[in-house]
Image 1 (cartoon, rainbow, N blue to C red):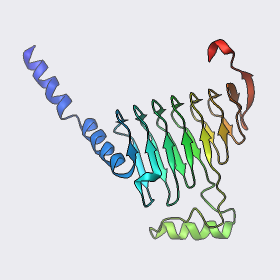
Image 2: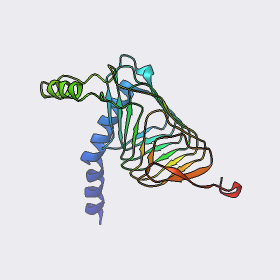
Image 3: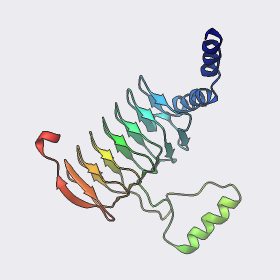
Image 4: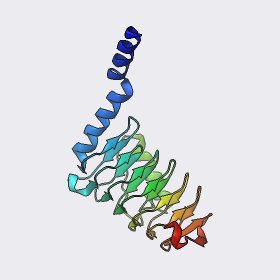
Amino acid sequence: MRMFKVKLFFLKFINPFRLFALHRKLMFQAFAICGKGLRITHRAEIFFHGTSKNQVFIGNDVLIDGTLDIYEKGKLRIGKNSFIGRSRIYSAQNVEIGEFCLISDNVCIMDSDLHPRSAQLRAEVSRKWVHGQFPDVYNKVISAPVVINNHCWIGYGSSILKGVTIGEGAIVGAASVVTKDVPPWTIVAGNPARVIREIPQNER
């Protein structure tokens, strides 16, 4: 029994996932202003292309299991006690996530089209990628801020697109595509997402 406990201790100590998580957390702390109690999993990633860590703020007691992609002029703010699942957030301009928010897995949040609408310009982007050049997400690309207010729940596989504000306490159903503002304390679902019902006072 004693030998088993010793082996278990060493397995926990040298667990590669634990080491990966520590490395990822150091990366987040290098590129973002991080609050106390931040938890980063071994799968979390941050791709920062900006010039100042002030562009990214992560509040206290946040857990991140997904990917944050911040472009040269992008800004990202995540409020305290929020959870970011195995999802991806793209910020070319500004993305704000409030406090006590739950972002499920496979969610995509993006404040920009990220690519031009012109096929010729997209072809040029593809050619640059092949040669390892970072794509320009600002020239002839439409962007607009995304705001997700406090106490929101974004369901599995949903997409939150540019220019959207999601009101306090709103719930976005699984696999929804949100292209317009969501009123506070409502449940929306579908593609495009529409209001299904209001959340009654006793469920708020």
